[in-house]
Length: 240
Image 1 (cartoon, one colour):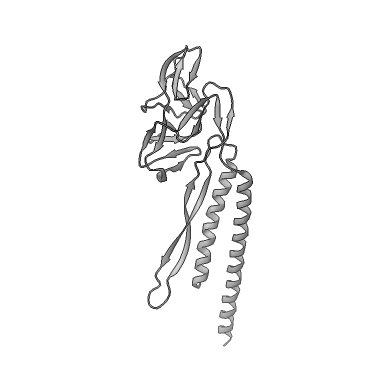
Image 2 (image 1 turned 90 degrees about the horizontal axis):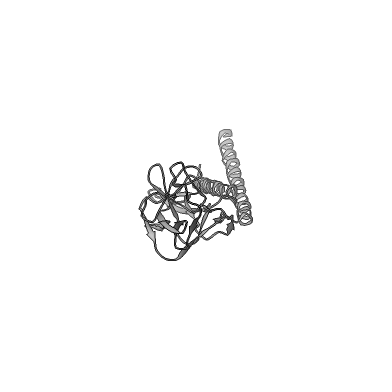
């Protein structure tokens, strides 16, 4: 196989990776708090040695998470929270803190606010958020102050990764920041009775999928022609 075929194969592999990313975006177009992803293509160069020119190949092994604001939906539910602006809620993961924009919470058996699948919500100090079980009315101020029957009981903080480029997608709508997280003090508000939608644009994703499909088909046609050419050369040599 010659250099052109190797280059095309790496391009095809990258296009497949981007197609999988787009398919995942479309599948989560209605998932609360989901953040759209894109594939980042990079170039790596191989030295062939001697007088041969270097070989340039493509890779798409990194995903870029798009953090732009998504529309908000009013639910009226007491423990539905939405962030308007930057930042994340902090929840307690199995192996460490996780960040999320999905703000649907509910009190667990111990009275602590948790995600619907059991991850505890953490306050501005990194501790679980407790709501008295006998509270008649629970309200949340825009600055994150949580009150029960008019008395403050805690503060839901907003958090961000220390290194924004270090954000890694984990388990649907949750993110891990290996470099650590830090509190945010300005630039966003928390709304009670709202949920943030997915920031996926289905029409844009379908249009991109068509572009990727066409590019992949062109690459496959080139590989088919190269295969026929090589077979022809081999058959001609064997006839001599």
